[in-house]
Length: 262
Image (cartoon, rainbow, N blue to C red; front, side):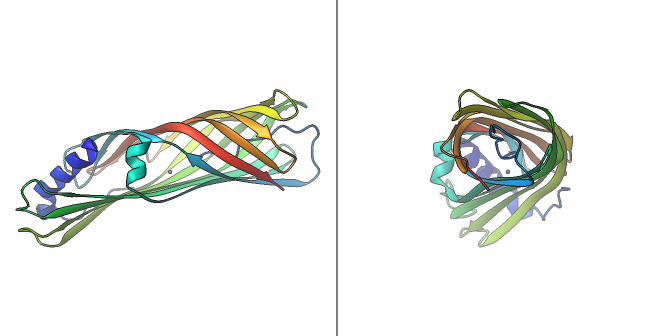
């Protein structure tokens, strides 16, 4: 956890002299599924998923030096407190509304090298992203569908560093970033057989962040008209920086989910 140790070291050196800073201000839509004929009225889907994602990039909090991040999924899993990931989709004819929510809370602690300034440092990181968008089908036949999409993604990233013991005693500071990015892109699917299909999307945007992008390629298996499973690989990147707070990262790794249609 070299990145976390570096961040803790920076915090121990400067946290006692830092006042809270107010920085201006975590998957895309449910994978579409092949269908032999156009349904009548609204159709809905709900897709909980599990993303085995590592994290690369750099972060900065409290105006302290920037810290490089290079964490595998196994590194993150050891300190993961809670995570929730799910997507939803509502479709009527060629029009659709979709949403996606990612929440993760990670906590780690470490003893300071000499225990003089503080005996222990706790680091808690919370990441939340929520995507809301609309889509329009520009091409559809019995085997394939292609949608153009547009929407907005809200981000909340929060880091809390707490010191205990030593010369400082008990001290805690929290730095946060909250912002919204507009996105545009495409998503679609292609049926290889009656039960197996390819699916994917690509989205890009900006707003509060300088860049916000998201890509996925996957394979789905349709058990019946109600339940499908999807496995693939996803990468999600964002580059945000404001007032001493930086979150410039790429999450990437395999993804596995279930799609329930009703």
